Image (cartoon, rainbow, N blue to C red; front, side):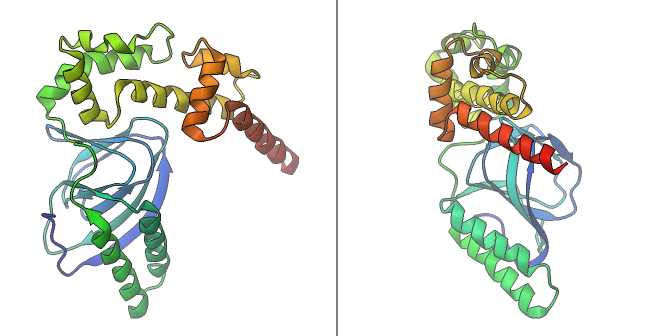
Length: 264
């Protein structure tokens, strides 16, 4: 790890879930961000970094960047702090995310109080999280801008046709004029997912939004709205991803809605 942590002063810590893209300009403090779920793309200068579940991002003081969720909400834990050094961008990984989450929760509780004992407990949690971090994550997250440009036509095509049944994932590499093998290598380096996984994540994320909003009374209609012509196949894919059927998700959503209406 190239970052140094001399004379650390913890400033703020919290957990957050948001679907929004956000931009930071000349941020005043350093941050340690731990990803909890979906892929998030950081763009700073000419560099693009993709992070996923369990990745730890160290953001330097004075950084200017844009962060964009790739699918679903952007869920993360963050610790803002001050040290002697400005630091640098670095992507690492924590294998035991459950333990890191527990430590972060304890750190947040300790920071509610400003007495010496609480500050020391918060610092202890911070350094224990650092001790759990390993060099790098399971996949390369950096993709130079010149390589990103190669797959951009395919990314744009997916964005436009993501919910179309006619989307041909196997032909995406032809849009970038490269072999399928090299295309998948660059695509995975940029998104952390294969093209098939990427499309599936975006489709299922949208399906969840439709189910929660009550946009349709039938699962087959939801399936069609997100690009699946076979409702049974959609249900299998959904269950493999979330561990329960879309029908159950619909029932749970309707129950929550009824309870809110009753209380209202």
